[in-house]
Image (cartoon, rainbow, N blue to C red; front, side):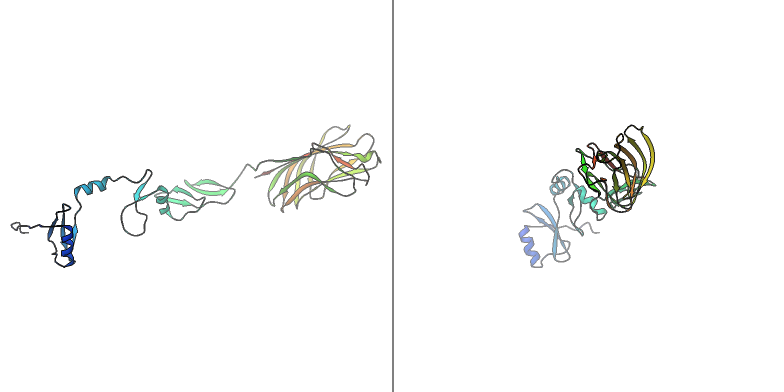
Length: 289
């Protein structure tokens, strides 16, 4: 490399330099001083020139403020190009496509996405990594319904006891509590009369224990197991025993969607019939085992 050669820097303006470029008058490696901008340029091989940034421009570029807070410098536009401002959400989008409900977690060496699970699943850990599993334990909110007035049926066919019913789903288990206070008014008409209440439900069964009480008799407990259409109260009418109460606590296991409800029927079609008293109620709660 010869060091005894004089380097000549041609003085020019930006406009004149562009004119020389258009006239193919620039030489590769030839230096130029753009006087109106106080910057250097050098000719390049395609009869063009390349100018150099001034120190003030370099310093400014290093210290430029971003547009607002909570921004990350990077590039989100496809292909190479200038640095851009990104939000944290845009950075996380680099991980891959995501949908509502997805979870981001840290894997062994990188971030990963866990697709959302299905309703009722719970988040669990396996070898330190999150995954979805079937929910266990607990149950849904308790539902409650009660008669606030007496319900009377004086016909010899079953009629739904309005206000005492729940919708249930197939293959679920429910805690079902029933309290019924029934009066057989037909004892006034005929001592041999009977009145009935039955339970109607989808296919499946209702099993547990019940507490029965009739007038002048002590409370006693017996086990029960019922399917749809079973009688749960048969009130015998006589002069000393005509009020009947029953508390049933058990697990309802329907195998089809439907409604669990109570119905009442009188023994005579007259003005007396059976009365389901105000305060009779049902409680239902889904249980998970």
